[in-house]
Image 1: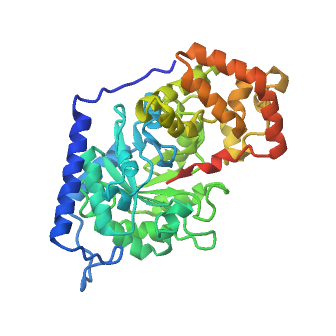
Image 2 (image 1 turned 180 degrees about the vertical axis):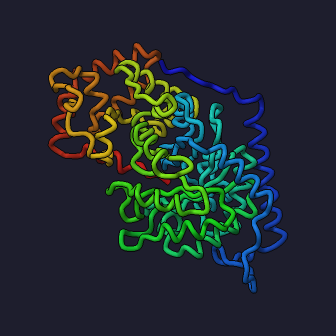
Image 3 (image 1 turned 90 degrees about the horizontal axis):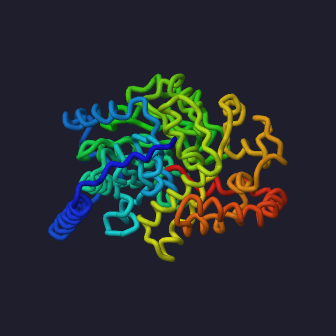
Length: 444
């Protein structure tokens, strides 16, 4: 029911990418030693430049190619702490054709930080891979793009939408939306010199009273960026308000640059509806894919897949196996992997998605009464997979990590459910913490 699509990596390709990346960094370091860096403020035009330079023909050609490659796609968004290589690999198994890395800090990447450099790695079955970075300095952006190209990325994305303090306190992410003209100069400076296409991910503005998305997209239209992704919330709204798809649509239809729509896509119904109604080039899914990685297969088929409880356990165990391969089958690898084991479940009808766009408003208890379920009829294992009590995450992850087969994982989780799920449900109801985990994941 859920075919695994793999594309073997050519022998030695990872070694070659690593060597290319080292040569790229080495050349940059030599150049810096020979000539002191004299950086202008982020995106600042050269002195005396009155008219922006024309967009290089190679940039226009590369942009046209990536736009056609992304047209009509459901793209996996950059997810801080969520969009790691094992998870992207799982999504690609279920038909994801365009996927993005977690956000990397360009400055730390260029200093050789191993954690940031690891985000350049691409899963063997990723058809189109975009590398997202955060910076407010042109030269950093260009060098990050060169590193991504050397590692095999198809395109790069400048993060101007992340609302988390770790980014905004540095003047990065959504903080860049405060000055659209300066942002446009930054994008132009990177796009004209990037060896691969550059896209930009933004939000509606800083706050509900400072929405400037239409002005920002208009300015970005002449910078040489290939496309702009618009997340339909402001920086201050984070994920607490429904995404404004009316404004996304208005912006997309007035823009001179392709727009990708993002926000509250949690089912294939929403993905298809927004793609058809908004005028966007493509649509982007983030936390909805964490809930159900098979949403990409649903989008392709045009119908909902309802994997059984045992099948979902098998999917989650597959992710655990991918994490073992990537992070290591030891205690250190286990600690890194456990943040996203297991993903959250989601079963919802299309019409409900119109009435309840926020993920944390679609769950009200153990049973889905909307589809005729009664609480007493839901088996313990199914209740466990639906339980959002954080106290249950690590025990469930331990079972998935340690099981040698899907059948062993099902049996282990069944025992765990029979012994604990009732108490975890009571705790969750008492503490009202059911939506807490959703906010821990940020889309870049």
